[in-house]
Length: 106
Image (tube, rainbow, N blue to C red):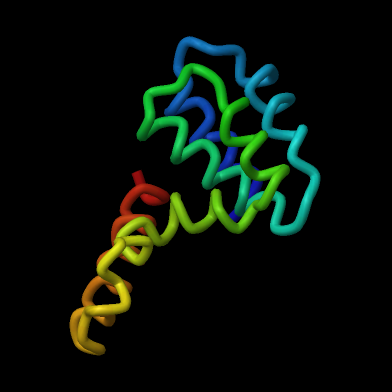
C-alpha cells in the first residue's frame, strides 16, 4: 500500500469531491496501520456510497480493527463462520483476499 494508491483511490471513489478535503478527513485517523486503515475507509465509503469518509474515520478512531475487518475480510465476519468446515473457511478466506486485491487493482 502506498500513498499514491490512496490518492488514486480517493480520486476514483470521490470523483466530484476535493481530494484535499477527503485527505484531510482521512488524516483525522492517526492510529496504527494508518495508510492501510485509510484505504479501508475509502473502500467502505465506496461500498456504502457515502460522499464523505467521516463515518468510518470515527469508527476507526474507536477501533481500527473493525474497519480493517469490514473492508478486507467481510465474509469472515459471517455469523456462521465457526460452523464452517476448515475447507469452507479456507475458501472464504481466499475469496476475501481476492475481492480486496481486485478492489485495489481497479
